[in-house]
Length: 109
Image (cartoon, rainbow, N blue to C red; front, side):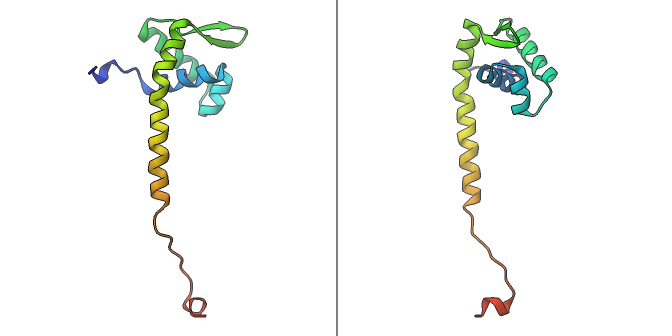
């Protein structure tokens, strides 16, 4: 099992995963509600850390390189698992008891 130190910063991975899906920094910025410069910095830092070019930049769009596509396909299931686990946790909490408070005169009728 690999050590957790091998995992890049999660914000950088989240930015990478979103840019891979949306194809532009602007759309990713809107979706993640962070600045475009922050997205760019995350992508640049991730590429520097991995020492791999993940995107080709052309005409204000980003296209995955072969290495980027391989990395995206490898990490995407982890994001899907986190999403499913979060949905399940929230759904469980929302299914708690329903409590209704009313004044006694309305309840007795």
